[in-house]
Structure formats: C-alpha cells, structure tokens
Length: 231
Image (cartoon, rainbow, N blue to C red):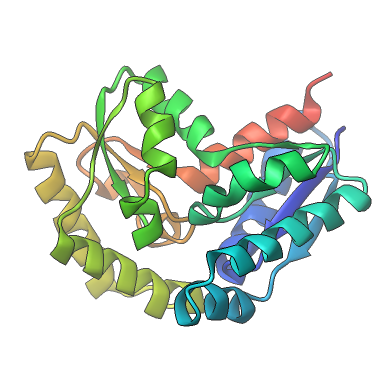
C-alpha cells in the first residue's frame, strides 16, 4: 500500500472528514481492519488566511503549501492529496519542486462528470475557485462547460464557507440558501453541480439536490485509495 501525503488544515473540519473517509474506504476496499497509510502535514489556516486575504500575497501562500509538500515527501509520502479545492491553484508552481505526484482534485472530478455523460455543470466554492481559471481549464479540457454563479450568489456561497463552515458551523438556513442557488443554476442549464469546496459536502446531501452533485471530497478520497492500493 502506497503512503498518502495529506496536506490539511485548510480547514481542519474538512481535513478530519478526509481522514475519516480515506480510512473507511480503505477498510471497505481492502477488507479486514486495513487502514490508510498516510502522513499529514497540517497547515496553520490563520497563517494561510493572513497571506492570501489580509496581505494578498499569493507567493507567500504558495510557499506555505510548497513547504508542506516538501515535508510530506521527506516523510515518505508517495503522492500528495490536498484537502482543499482552491489550494490546487498552486500545483503548477509546486510540482517542479518536488519529486512525487499530486492527485489533482479537478481531474478526479472531471472524470466523474464525464462518466455520467454530463456536459454542463455549475461550480460552487470559495471565490478563488469560482473566479479563477485553474479549475475551469481542467474541466474544459474534458469538454465540460462550466456555469459560474452570479456575483450575489458567489458572495453568499463564499461568505458561508469562510464565516461558518470552516468553523464547523452548518445551519439549515445556509443549507436552504445553497439549495436555492443550485435550483437557479439548474434553470440556467446546469446538468449537475460540483460541490467544489471540501466543506460543502458536509452541508448538503446528494438526496436533497435536484440535479446530480459531485462531492469533491468523496471523489478525491476514493481516487486516493485507488491510487494507494494500485500495484
């Protein structure tokens, strides 16, 4: 079994969910009481937020993730999983500076969407996920059109993540707000919706969403276990 390198802390809430699912899926797949071989490098979210939001210093934020990746490599990780969607924007800068592979969350998600023969999906997440091109470029390379929520919707989605979910706060009011946005996006032609922040699947259940939904956490964890167990 390969050793998974997990970059977490962004937030601890979704990192804990990753740890749980990686081990549950490993046990269900490998049988017995197998658990995932992994090493965790947990980034201090406050340091990251200070760099990205308060100082608007993308280079400093990228350096934090690079150091985390390098520490995982030194600890014997054989590939890296980041338990945060928007941090994947740094993967192109980091990859040349390490010798192990990243399992990219957008690639995993794109494959799952194509497997359901969908061509147009909505993307929810923090602003950097919805407004930057790092996620959309990968989806479009798989011939998947992306619908981005409007400004008012983006503000609601982003603020709920940053002010509530990363602090382990999940309310019925926010849940309904997200479902209303997804319904509106479906009316605009979205055939499915990407839950493109690893906290969102902790707020919403697939059974409550009128169109196919793609939990990036679940897809990422399943792909990581498959990669870890591959010969």
